[in-house]
Image (cartoon, rainbow, N blue to C red; front, side, top):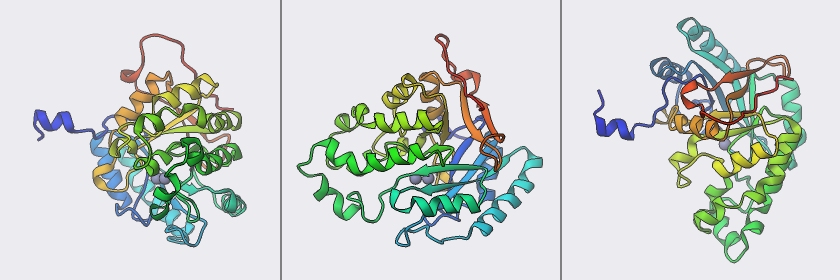
Length: 304
Ligand SMILES: [Zn+2]
Ligand SMILES: [Zn+2]
């Protein structure tokens, strides 16, 4: 039992149709067996989950060759068979770290290996100015646009490839630069992300609402409301939602708030994929009615 005060603090998501961004012990930075997530999903009424362990393409990155594709697939598909009869659907996905310098390898990986659902993300790649030992020196004295530029170039390129179902935590670069710029300045930089948002719209790639931002100093999802709203204004209709959990305590954390954010921006469905075919396996998952705004038109996800 949790008391009233605890309940107010409790941001574990409940009664949601989907958490599409989860890391298991098959990611180097997570330690949760897939069955633990499945049991939590059952307990909390989260009926579908996507396991999206990290796949890296630079040998200096931690998820490079960490667990083979075959082993990851077997682990997740076996779990899916065990849990489907109990009412939890488990999909086999991946979070693939994108950079233009290894785009060819990434393409080749996706040609060889079939996932149900893919997230493309830009992280602080080894030669980037955002790695912890370099980021302060990099950002000091630079205008924000310049400090963001290497990240923005990669994220716009990732969004434009059309290789992924969704782009993860679009503005996570904020996290790297928090020590160097004031929050309002970084949060307000909507126009700097426009090329990435336009690339998402043009390539038909979904924008992920990643609720891990609520666990960080951002205090709001990646991306926050201004970018979500701008994406929609630009014609974006496809969004996904995930907690990006790396630990048992993070499963579904603040995912409710993530759903609220995308519903407030006018989205009524989540774009998802439940199989290897990038066209016919696409589905639209309804956002529960309790999140819906009462007024205003809403875009719907095109299945084409
Ligand atoms: Zn990530
Ligand atoms: Zn992740």
